[in-house]
Image (tube, rainbow, N blue to C red; front, side, top):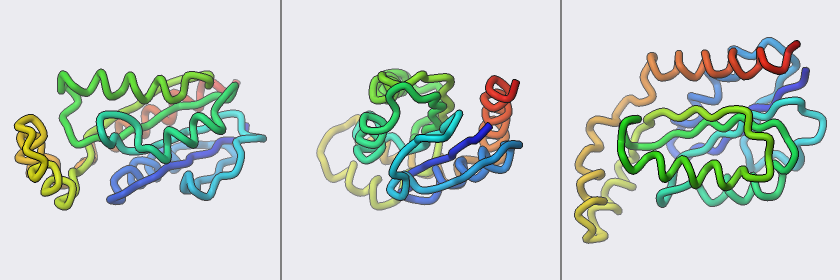
Length: 166
């Protein structure tokens, strides 16, 4: 089995999740930034990771999925700045699923990451009370993903690769 872990990361938090997933894979594997991947040919399973931006997948990730994911076995891993039980999150994750609509979506993992200070300041400046409230919760995101979330990512990697290793 040949596996790819491809990711985009603005603050290094999604990369941290990518590394946790990559370290758990017991197969022929590669890891790369999405911007460096030209094709998904030759991979039996592709883990694709990115942050939520503007209430959905980061634009570069969306374009990557639309261009390359059709017919491929894809496991998404997504970071976001809200707690996993946030009401708004399910809609955002739905937009991520939609971006991978042409793929064989075999699984999806999400966890809280750290909201960058520059993004929090930008959210506050927009004049939207909900965005300002999320920005004010930045302190709760510092240090995320924590070890517990990274262990969940590792478990996700083991589960996904077990499906394809038989």
